[in-house]
Structure formats: structure tokens, C-alpha cells
Image 1 (cartoon, rainbow, N blue to C red):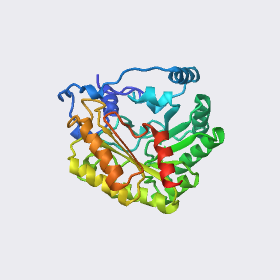
Image 2 (image 1 turned 60 degrees about the horizontal axis):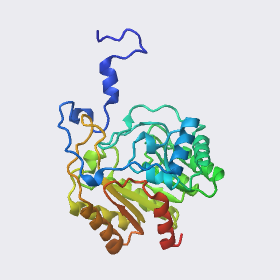
Image 3 (image 1 turned 30 degrees about the vertical axis):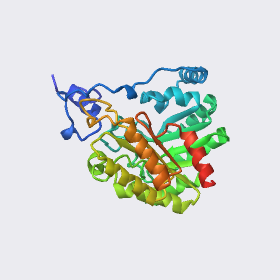
Length: 330
């Protein structure tokens, strides 16, 4: 029986529709999509649970706290938590955008939680973090794209843990009324140590993979960051293995340096689901990642390039910031 009898009860078809994420539903591979080939040896991670990891995990369990590290099953969680670095998701867990590689559900978001900045700050304090990365979903439903919420979170963490470094991985702030630059200025005024915004892919693939964003708009956001605060350390990320060519990656790197982006991370795309996400185009060999790092640091002058199969945008975030800040005199 497919008809909904009570408004609060949804049909199976409605539930399945809500669970479809990543590419537009009409373009999703579907249940019959072929399984990706087995991962090469360099993409396999060994579990290493040290004292810091165990302590942080216990704190999270006891307090009912959540990090992107755990929710996204990040392969680097052991190393990052040992270094007392963690990543938090801001503005809820429902996004107003749909990207072909992302595992966050696209749906109408819930209202912002006014207590969320304090909750994240308390989690940072309890975990004794040395460096916190705060990322978040796009909130196009808000007049200011939730930029005031981002700024409040930075201030709350700074007050709770003055010695903790802060990186914010922001969306492009396309709110209902306020201009993206005005929203960006509000966040920069809160003085994060690192302002990150991810380009994610090359110009040719950008409209397909990130349809809600814009290649040029993302570059402009990073450029504005330097105009608003000259000593602001900026950062971006590229994902490879989604159909790009190596020369296109080099061009994207050049485009990022043209807007004075300081830090770049490059990692392998790992398909979140077979049925509803972009398939892996290829497993990128570690030698190619090494070429990207050498080109970025030696030829283009990035302060730091973190490039490797298991690299994610928040991987070694504290180390990246300290190296970039020392080189830039920040």
C-alpha cells in the first residue's frame, strides 16, 4: 500500500528519495551500478590506537559528542587524534547543495541551534585540542548564509581554548540577501587562523561535480579573504580520481596561486556509495601525488602542499598552519 495514511508517516518511496545523495537523482548510477575495483595497497589503513586517541574517543562517548572524523569514517582519524586535532560539522547535518562526491544528505535544513557554538567550544575544551577544524554545510536558506553562526563559533572556541588553533572550512556564503563578500568579512573579523574554501575539482568538471557552486566564485572568495585581511592564511583542496587529467590539476593549482592561496591539500576520491555517487575514475598512484606536491611548492610557491592518496582537507591541519605561518610571517 503506497498511499500515506497519516501525514507524519512516509512511504518507502519517499524515504528512499530522501536518502539519495550526491549527483542529481536523474543522473545517479542506480542500484545496478558496477562495483569499484578493489583498492590498491597504498589506500589501506592500519588501525593504530594510541593513548591520545583512546582518551578522545572515551570523552566523545561519555559526552555524546560527534566529529566529522568519526561520522565520515576518515582514514586519518588515528593520526589526527593522536596529534589532538579534530574536525567538527557546523550548521546541522543537512545541506542545501548537492555535490557528486559528498556523503552529506541534501534536504531542507533544520533551524540553526543557537547553542551550537558553545557546544563545539566545550567539545574542543574537553578534548584538549591543539588545533580544531570547523567545517559546515551550505545554508542558502539563511539571509547571511549562517556567517554570523560561523563567527560566533570561532569566538566561542577562542574563549574556551585560547591556545587552540582554529581553521574554518567555509562554503561560498550565497545567502538569501547578504552578499557573499559581506558574509565572508564577518567570519574573517572573528580571526580564524586559517580560512579554507575548497575548489575540489578542475574547471572542466566543476559544473557537473559541484553544480551549486562556481569555479570562478570559489577563487573569488579566496581572493577576497586576502583583500579583507592581508595576513589571513588561506587554504583549498582538490580531489583527484573523478575524471580529471593531470594537466588540468596543474592548471587548477595555478589558478589557486593567482589568488594567493597559501596551503593546498590533494587527495584521492573515495566513492561514498555505489548507487548514488560519482564512480571512481581511477586510483591515482602515489608518484602522481608527489609530482603535485613538488610542482606546488617548488614551482608555484605554495607555503605547503599536502598531497597523497589518503589526504583529506583537514589532514595535518595544525602542521600545515604552523609551517605556512612561519613562512608567511603571520
